[in-house]
Length: 284
Image (cartoon, rainbow, N blue to C red):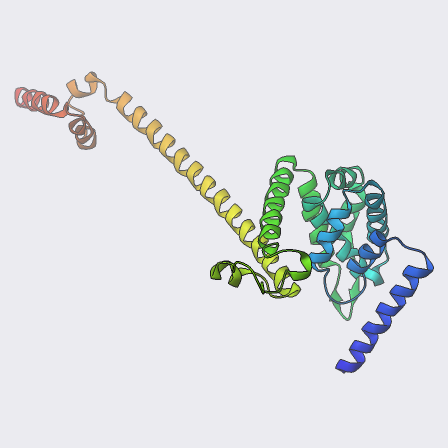
């Protein structure tokens, strides 16, 4: 079974490579086709990162986006093309050139139509993830402030990760320990990824942690706002209660115990209580 699966994947890869040559696709187009192919696994972070860098080149940007828009309009049987294109597009909106989000806004209708994408395969709703991803991207594109924050957060995470990955020299020695010269600090050395797979995993973890931290900050801010609102409401109720405690209320002998306690806490209750006692004795 495993051998058969690997054979099918090899045939699919060979077919894609032949088509790349036959249609004379550019390097940028080949990368996008690979990232959004029908293989049953998602595009790697390393490949999407390469494509995001290509969006800074005007010609490559046009080539990248043309393939993505074509994939997004694919038929239901090629639902993986559609879903992977949305995954890649989400990454490019956050990490690619600003022109990506600009073009997505101009063509947002294409993304919005995918909210209703339907395709059943092997009794499974394969359109569910596509619908959810389309909703997420649409919401992000229509929220300027959130998009700005997401781009800033992703860029900082990516920059820090690249700086850490670049320790020790060029890319050809990225995953090798230095043979000569000054040795790196043991903690830094241990933190370096030992393979491309580990590098991708570290980036995904860093992105997830950054997102979690951002959500915690938002939750704390909302909690502070709730506490502030409760404090303001309590202060308003206190002010209204104090406003009702006029001298005439005391003179009429209708001062409640709670009101008296409030006055005592303010340091004026002693005089009032004496006055109330005198009034009570005179009435008796």
